[in-house]
Length: 281
Image (cartoon, rainbow, N blue to C red; front, top):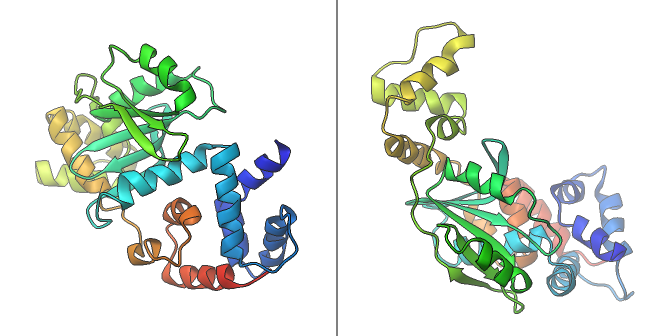
């Protein structure tokens, strides 16, 4: 189990940043090589793929779930120009694991076999204040338990199957009953909410900086909550990644796609990463 935890830790922004850094490259490569079981030279990219396959089989952590969600809910279904994923996105007092934005907002909460359900009710309540469709993503082992728990709920259920694919067990129902102006508005950055207020009211409040947000929120509350949600969705969809063509490229290993998406690598960072992945150790 210790070895699997160390393997899991390799799929992190800190390790990729280390690989891309002249100062930390050697140390990061040592971390990768430390868990090897053979001595024959192999590509760095192949090492990542091997470790990822082992995690899929023996230690399905949150990263494995998210990487599969990215593949099967985004890359295989939609264009990156029209759909955006938000990772670890703060909504009220919770952080959503995975949000898919295109013509609607869908929140995906991941619960692996390594997690507990202590915070689930609070998380779902928070997500309902922002999104109209919510999915819980679990393994087959937890499927029956979750199905009973959410039997009368609008929350959908997606099973991460033993074969490593996603199966929709229960489709999420549209539920706008708990949408909250304040929660929706607070996900925006300052420039974004000023644009929204200017669009609807033709001006932004002429008040001291310390009062700008509260005055804008007061105005936002005058809008129908669905109108506000739609505007916020459209604004958030602009937070797309820099190099979509490199993310979907075969040069980016399947095992690292979610990590590259999350880090939003630049063109030069991708080129450096490709060079490192092609080197043999």
